Amino acid sequence: MNENNPYQTRLAVNKSKRSSTSAVTSPATAKQTQTTYRKKKPVGKMLLFGSVSLAAYALLISNEALVTNTYTLGGWWAALPVGTAFGFSFIHGAFASNLLSVLGLEPKKA
Image (cartoon, rainbow, N blue to C red; front, side, top):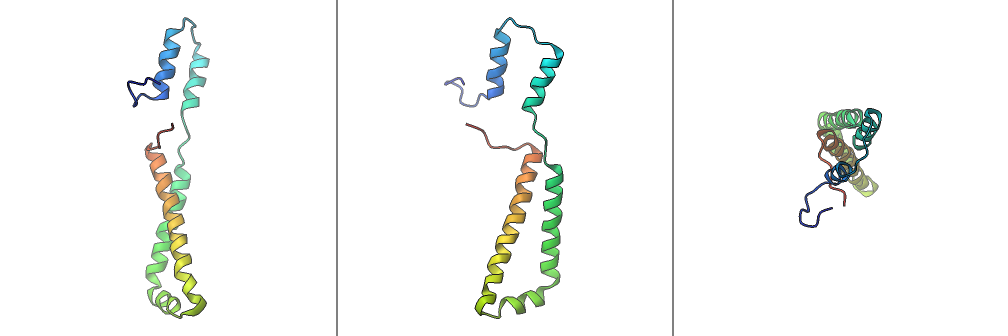
């Protein structure tokens, strides 16, 4: 990468290296190169975790009295709110991660 431009992408560097060579690429080679840079978007996973997240929130809200009575029993029952928080965190985090991937927002690779 160019030291003067830290925002230059690897793809741009690869293109500049390819354009400086005298080799001619065939359409098949160009298509193969294009597909190596594309990543399949996890739309199915996003929809799955989004629907599970919505269902979990709906279930929690619709059974508010049962949840409150069960979670306030004390003793070993005190582990239920912690487990529920971990479950909601995992499901919501997986949905958010897949949503960002579908939108094309990926972390920059070093």
